Length: 58
Ligand code: SF4
Image 1 (tube, protein in one colour):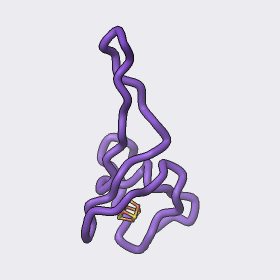
Image 2 (image 1 turned 180 degrees about the vertical axis):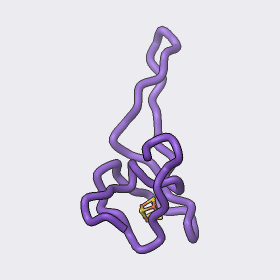
Image 3 (image 1 turned 90 degrees about the vertical axis):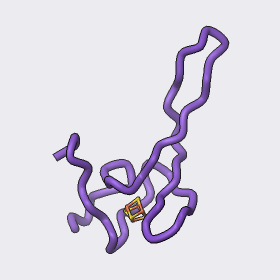
Image 4 (image 1 turned 120 degrees about the horizontal axis):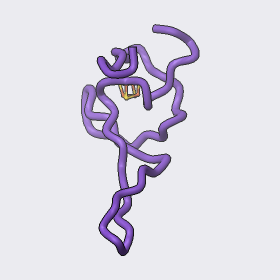
C-alpha cells in the first residue's frame, strides 16, 4: 500500500453526494467504506491495510 494513498483512491470507498435544487449532484468530502464492514470515512482519510486501488485511478 502506498503511504500517500487515501480512501478516495480505494475501490472500497463510496463517496457521498448532495443534490442541488437544479437536480445536479455535487461530491462531498465524505463517504463510506464497506470493507470489511460499513463505516464513515473522509476522502482524505489515510488508507488502511485493506486498501485496493480503484481500477479507474491507477
Ligand atoms: S478504510 Fe481502508 S478499505 Fe476502507 S476505503 Fe479506506 S483504505 Fe479502503
